[in-house]
Image (tube, one colour):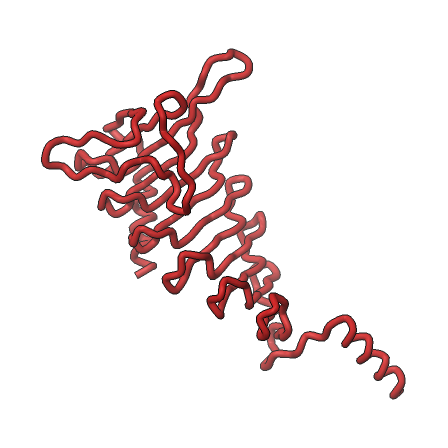
Length: 236
């Protein structure tokens, strides 16, 4: 199911690269519709993760795009009015893009931009249930952190970290589903080399396994390591 949704998302985002023929702007938080046509959800909450912003005519401009040409907007660009320090005039700065991938009148993608016009964060509803399943955090136009809400959880249960070459360097997971990370994977050039687990719920790993190991090994504390080394030296 997620693969199908991903393919649909890719096709839609690819179509967004072409210039839409129908465009209109609005300073209101809702859109007018023609008689007999469905209406896209009101644009007041720009993030289903909870943050809200009042799209007043004084500070924001909303532009609507009809990608599939069904006379219903399915992509929205929200611009923020900012003052140019040199000219003193107000200019429009792209703030958020919202997309309805499956054309059901509900926003599935929230794409946030920074002051330089680059993507800063992207929130995605992958299964179209009205809840955010993935949040991508960008740095320099590259995803460096991805939060995934699995098993119908609204909180992230898996967090992935990437390097500047888009290679996975660490994975964290809440396997016990209690809101705390208790499983870690560490990667070297995208290759798994170590796994750690927290089995007693104290937030710290107590067993680990390296690449090639068949079983987990107990993690020794600094005190335990000192006693172990001291006993070993005495026995020698």
